[in-house]
Length: 296
Image 1: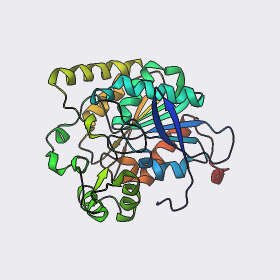
Image 2: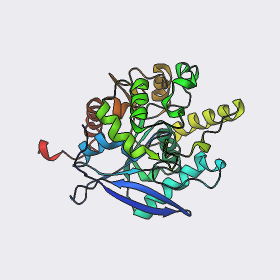
Image 3: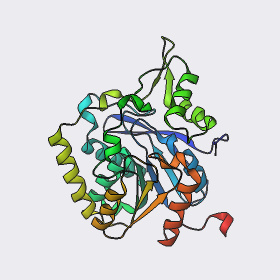
Image 4: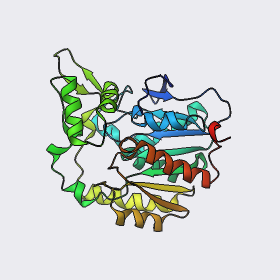
């Protein structure tokens, strides 16, 4: 579903000296429960557009451009993209906006940041949805040639060349959707080339010791989370394996797992209808979402 009509407001907030851009999908109805969406690495708040447009009559949706992405500021140096930095950003965001307990949904990098936040500020998280990420990455993704990963392409000769490259990497996405999404994600520079808005300095290679420490901390964080939690896995994802997803369910209290068919790692965009159905069914079962106007 392309969002040809603009249903959001572009807003900014300053946190810790950095400017953060976010999409406010408020529908005008008051007292809707808040929902915060955290995108994956190399993406931005528009990654959630299909989902945000569908669920805005049930929740007041905020889709944040995390540091180094979209129209938010970059960190002063490459060391400024750690888990603690993202935690401070998210904490500052929800405190500045005065958000009460909210539904927190994170994909990939955003899912890792959501886990870290939920483990440390449980009073703020009414419900948690982790989308296709776990403490350990699936073997298929570890062995994936970097040249095949669209996120690793640094520049394009034209906008249409970028659209074609994105479609080759993920043919599940309609071309119309990719054009709309990349229109927010890329910028044409004075030399005529198109480049992603993201700060590529953030992609620092982990040492084996760093990776082991991060994984151990993530498993420990899962045990600390007290909110109801849903893990959403893409059926064709190379990132979150069924085994790791099941281990996460067994590690966390009150956790459930759903697999969305016809989707890879980027579930909300690969199968928008399937993702929306899975998340809203779970929220309704947990009595977290109010009924949509069409259902009243």
